[in-house]
Length: 115
Image (cartoon, rainbow, N blue to C red):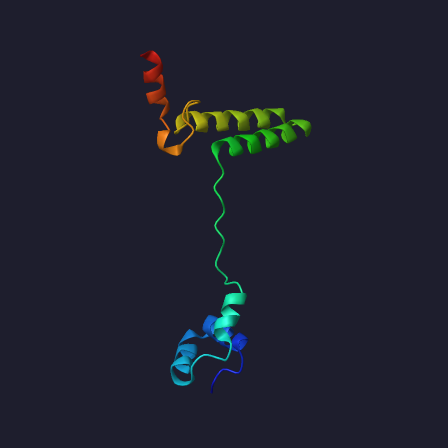
């Protein structure tokens, strides 16, 4: 039994790929299937852009300010402390170097300052 329309074929590929493979082999694709696939998005998840350290710090500061306005100053301070600890323990960018290839570990930055 061949496909009646492109939507049926797409649904068959999603729900019963073995049957769809057999039908395509025997009868070919539904008329207009290639055009249908071009115009309809797939269900692939879109990748989110990773936030930079500066963006994370800004977001954290906004949350901390909101917590303080709600009367949770202690929690806001803990949040700020934990973010400061995380940013100081990992790789950071120096003020002079703004490209990721020039990122330095804090130990390297301290060694350069001593010299």
